[in-house]
Image (cartoon, rainbow, N blue to C red; front, top):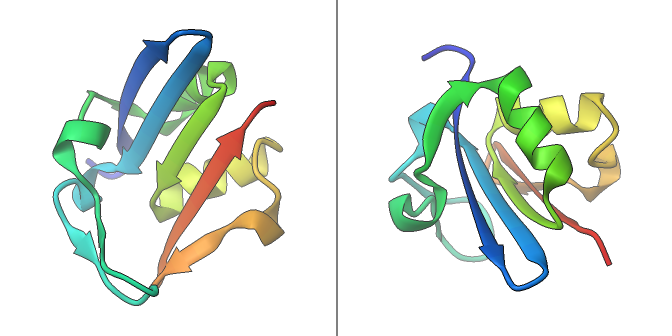
Length: 100
């Protein structure tokens, strides 16, 4: 599962919501932020895929939630997330994208 992430997408009215997390984080509770953060299976567990494939879906999202080093670093690398917008839950990066 080295470069794989879970990606779940849902259409909500005009919004295309995408949630993606590094595979090994699914179901874990991350500590180190203000409050514990649950990488909830109901929200994040979708299709398991390679990071590059996930980026194509993330690019289409109007609201995007990303958790994990691989998926967040990939989004930064392709310019979807500004490096200064990344938050950390302990040592795990988290980013959100909202297109208005």
